[in-house]
Image (tube, rainbow, N blue to C red):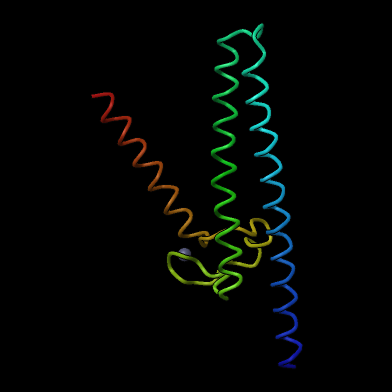
Amino acid sequence: MRTSIARNQNNSRETHRKILLNKKAEILVALGINAKRLAETRTEAEEDALSTANEESVRLRINRVLFGQLSQVECSLDRLKSGDYGTCVSCGEAIAAKRLQAVPWALYCLACQDQLFHWETESSIRVSLLKAS
Ligand SMILES: [Zn+2]
């Protein structure tokens, strides 16, 4: 019984590792394509300057999201290696299996993620209020 549980854990660890490595490759490919598109846009002289600037800012924003995801994936791979995978980096509680299935690179449990999100939203509101006054 014990060995079968251990084997199951190893299996799911291996599965998560594969998912994370696939995701990493996917992000790297997307980043590569984005970087290439950025370079191509710059050499197309006849393209409208304003729309180029807009497109670049959109692509840079996408790249920023991708880089953020990439660091999460890499952090998850590290945690998989150290055996901390699946526990919340904030409160140390186990992250729900369902959540890990949906977001294998999740670093926070749902409660902490919610708190973090609210905090981020709140502070960005505060910043824009400061700017407005
Ligand atoms: Zn947590």
